[in-house]
Length: 190
Ligand SMILES: [Mg+2]
Image (tube, rainbow, N blue to C red):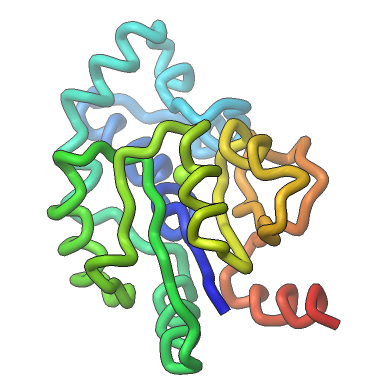
């Protein structure tokens, strides 16, 4: 089968990592509760920043957020390695821009994710992911972002939502923990 994955906040805890980084950079302590209460993908509101300030801070911190110590979610690497061993095809579809494509691919390999060079797609806007997902004829696709998931409703791909505070309104199969995923997929197949 063909499995497709978004990367940020689906396979790796990018926002939570950035949330800790912002605290260090700003010299401020913001309780993690504020992170878990966010109802949008962007994190700057928890620091009292405007959208403009938040966007500037994100861009300014981007290299560090993407390529330092951001951890994969527990069980994610193991699960994808298992899929590869079982002979499934694994695709990555990320909105990270093309200029970050090669470096992101290498970073993912370093974390232990199984990456085939020609199974890696970057630079997709939210509404463009659907095209590549349909073209690849994926059986399963995993993402966290409502703006992407909304475009996939009614299609042939089985969509699974990585649980985040900003996507709880979506009534779809949901992964809280990657270790639970095997069961979820078996349930869907039955
Ligand atoms: Mg994402």
